Image (cartoon, rainbow, N blue to C red):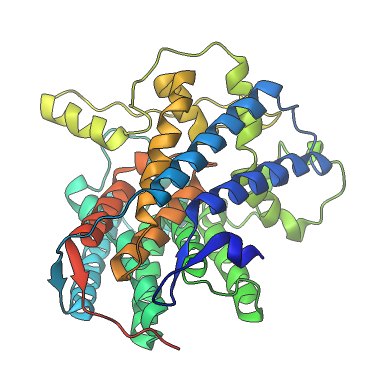
Length: 407
C-alpha cells in the first residue's frame, strides 16, 4: 500500500518516486513526532498560528511538487557522457588533495593537531560565523562538489551494485567527515546521512533490515563525534545542562545522544512559535534563503559580507533552529509562504519526473535538502548550492552511457 503511494511504475519496469506524496507524509510525520516531545520534555506551548503557518507551507510545497510532477514532459538531445568511472576517480582525487590542503591550513594556523583536538571549541568559533575564515573560498567551494559526488556514487551503486561504486560512496563520506572536522561541525555529515536515506527511497530499498539498523547506529555515532570532541567526550552533559531539569521522567545517561538528536532536529516548531509571537524585524528580501547569491553580489560591489546568526529562542531552553519557514518569513513576510514553497515544490516535482543516473543522483541529493528543511534551507550555504547546480547541469546536459541495472 505504501509502495503504491510513493512509487509510480513506468513503461520500462522502473519506478518514479512520487515526491509530492513523500512531502505530505514527511511533514505530517515531522509534526507528530515534534509534538510527541511533550511526553518527555516540558516544552513551551506551540501557538495556534504556528500550526496554521506550518500547514500553509506544507500545502503549497506539496501542491507545487504535484504540479511539477504532473507537468508535461519534453525531450531534447543531450550530450553523451562516457567514462563516468574515470570522472569519479579524478574528481575524488581532486577533492582528497583539497581536503588535505584544508587541514594543512588549519594545522599551520593553530600550530598542531594536538592543539586542534584539545581546543576544538576554539577552533570552531574561530571559523564559524566569521566574514573571513582560515580556509579561502577558492578551496572550500571546489571541494564542496564532494556532496554531489556522494549522491552520484550512491546512484551509480544503485544501478550497478558494483563494489567500486560502493567504494566511491564510502570514500566520499570520509572526505565529507574530514571536511566537517575542520570546524568540528556536523552539517555535512548529516547531509550525507540524509542523502543516504534518499538513496534508499529513490532506489526502493528496504529500510528496516538488520544491516541497516547497525548502519544507522554507526552513522549516529559518526554524527555525534564532532560534538563529543568539542565537549571533551562529556556525553553531551554541557548541552543538556539546561534541558535535564525539564525532563518529565528520568532519562538514562546512555540515551543522551538520542535526546540531543531530538532536540537538534525536532524542536524547530517550538522555536518558530516563539519567533512568530514577537514583532518581526525588517525584511531581508532573499538574504536568508539565497545567501550565496547575496554574498557574490556584495563581493562584486566591494561591500564587506555580513554574517547572520539567529538569536536564541527560549523553548524554554535556548535554541536558534527555526526551520526554513522562519527564513521565508524573514525574507518575504507571510505572503512569501504563498510563493516560495510553490517554487520549491515545482522544482522538486520536475526533478523527480525522470529517471537515469544523473537525475537519480539529483533526486537523492534533493531528498537530503527536504530532510534539512525542518532545520533551515541548507542551500543558504554556498557549498551545498554549488553541488546542487553541479548535479542539475549534469542531469540536464548529459546522457550517461547506460549502466546495467542489477537484478
